[in-house]
Image (cartoon, rainbow, N blue to C red; front, side, top):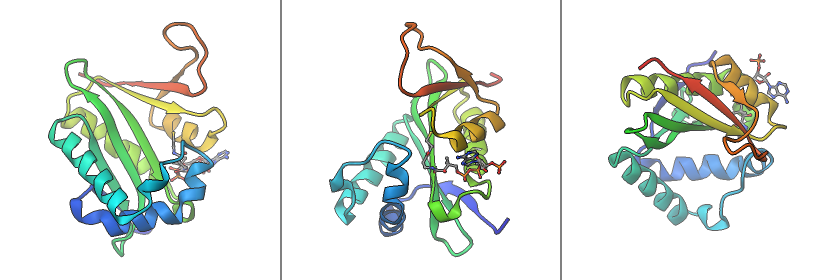
Amino acid sequence: MTSFKVRELRSTDTEALLAFETLNREWFESHIEARAPSFYSVQGVAEHIQAYLSDFALGAWHPFVIEDASGEIVGRANLKNIDSPKGCAEVGYRVGERACGQGLATLALKHLIQEAQARWALTQLVAYVYPKNVGSQKVLGRCGFVPEQAAPDGKPHSENRFILSLQA
Ligand SMILES: CC(C)(COP(=O)(O)OP(=O)(O)OC[C@H]1O[C@@H](n2cnc3c(N)ncnc32)[C@H](O)[C@@H]1OP(=O)(O)O)[C@@H](O)C(=O)NCCC(=O)NCCS
C-alpha cells in the first residue's frame, strides 16, 4: 500500500477538504445522505470544520482525515456523538472514489476503535449503514462489528445498526 496516514482534522484543512468533498460529491451522495448545497463553499467548509473542532473541544466529537503521501485528503473518519458517561459513540467514515479498494476505510476504522479505547475509554461503538452499502458492511465486519436486526423498540429502520463492544 502507498503510504497513508490518519490524522486529526485541522482548522487549516478548509481548501483541501473542500476539494475532497467537491470531487467526490456524487460518489458520496450515491451511498450516504447528501450535504446541504451551502456546505460546498470555502465558508461552508470553514464553518463545518469549526463546528467539528468545537465539538472536539467539548469531548463530543473526534474528527480525522486520511492523507496520502503528498498531503492530499483522500478520506475522512469521525467518532461522533461521544457520550462519555454512557461509554458510547457512533463511527462514520468516507473514502474518495479513486482511493477505494485499498483498505483505507478499514485502516481508518481501526484508528477510530483505538482512539475510542485509549483516549475516550469507551465500551461500545455503533454504526448505521444502508443495506445496499455492501462495502461498508464488509469494513465493519472485518473490524468486529456485528449487525443488530431490529431497533430496540422492535420497529424496522431504513439503516442497519452495527455494534462493537470494547473492553473497558
Ligand atoms: C464504503 C467505503 C467507506 C469503503 O472504503 P474502502 O477504503 O474502499 O474500504 P476497504 O478497502 O477498507 O474495504 C472495502 C471492502 O469492501 C469490498 N467492497 C466494496 N464494494 C463492494 C461491493 N459493492 N460488493 C462487495 N464488496 C465490496 C471491497 O472489495 C473491500 O473488500 P476486500 O478488501 O476484501 O477486497 C467507501 O466506498 C465509501 O466511502 N463510500 C461512500 C461513503 C460511505 O458509504 N461511507 C460509509 C457510510 S456507513
